[in-house]
Image 1 (cartoon, rainbow, N blue to C red):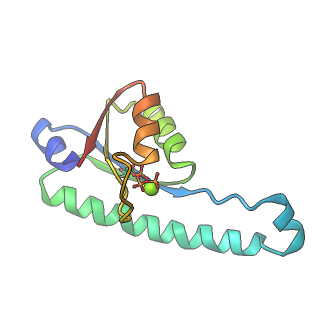
Image 2 (tube, rainbow, N blue to C red):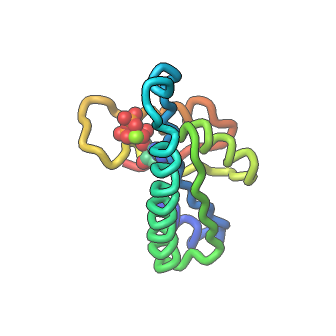
Length: 127
Ligand SMILES: Nc1ncnc2c1ncn2[C@@H]1O[C@H](COP(=O)(O)OP(=O)(O)OP(=O)(O)O)[C@@H](O)[C@H]1O
Ligand SMILES: [Mg+2]
């Protein structure tokens, strides 16, 4: 949807994937040498995230959007999305209403809900 809009309005499109922060509790850090796993996970997720945004970029370019840039950043997804929107001067945030898991019940995921509630700019959630 974002790709279609970018193409129609000749707009710039920024694709962002956030690697969810998994903080290891202090107590666990003292019990086991988990730092290495944390680093390894982050490195692996950087590669996965890059593939995800590259795939998205291919898809939106095939729709005709041509001013496209991609980012992979670690952190709390909603917080990073909001911060990036500010930093990159984004004027419309496009998200799915839910993630790709198959959870049922809630109408909107916690990320899309938090971003929509706290964003200073317009948000579009796609069903
Ligand atoms: N890590 C992420 N990086 C970039 N965008 C994300 C990320 N997580 C969620 N989003 C955006 O938020 C939308 C809704 O996902 P969200 O995570 O809120 O729902 P969920 O996964 O179904 O529920 P929850 O995460 O609360 O269990 C996604 O379609 C996507 O646009
Ligand atoms: Mg989610």
